[in-house]
Image (cartoon, rainbow, N blue to C red; front, side, top):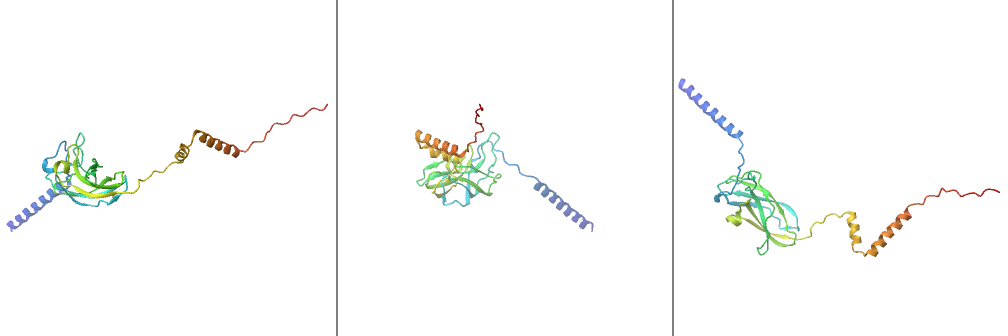
Amino acid sequence: MMKKSAGVILVLSLLIGLFLITSSCKGKKEKPAVVAGPLPETAYFVEFMESQIPATLKPGESRKVPVTIKNLGDTSWPHLPGPEGGYEVNLAYHWLDDKGNVIIWDGDRTSMPFDLLPGAQVTLEANVRAPEKPGKYKIQFQMVQEKVAWFGDDKGADTLTADVEIKGLMPTKPVSEKKVEKQKTSGLTEKAKKQTRGAKAKVKKKATPKKKSQTKKATTPNK
């Protein structure tokens, strides 16, 4: 009987200890890695899982493009810059023409919401801005460690490339009334401008009613 009770107490003690260890681990938050230099060469491996790249964009258009990435390296990718700036890992892109020539090298950056652990994946809303000239292009997504290297160009890692056609007109900004008036008179000669100003002055003069004179006529005294 004593042996059984001792065994029960031992099992209960082990369960309580395991519970306390698990609770303490859950309460601890992993601090983001602070990187002040290049990552090891074994860190520059990525897999592009899914994406929703549009087939067409308007010139100069900005669009959020979902792109899912996976860390295939053996080191966490830091999402925050180092103490003196730089060294964080971001998603970026190049714009190429239909022959593969670079048109825009440094595309907009999209940061990660947290450090990406080895084997982990995350879907980012990539900030994409289209070229301003219509035509057929290729967009090439790559990961980049700021101040160090592009994963694809410099380290030979995987990239994501898709054909995108830029067509349509650039969105126009609303023009103020003063600007419209200036545009109307910008092509006139100096003489025509004076005539326009004179006509406006006459219209304004006609629009203002004349005040009645309150001056009394002088009366001649009776002789």
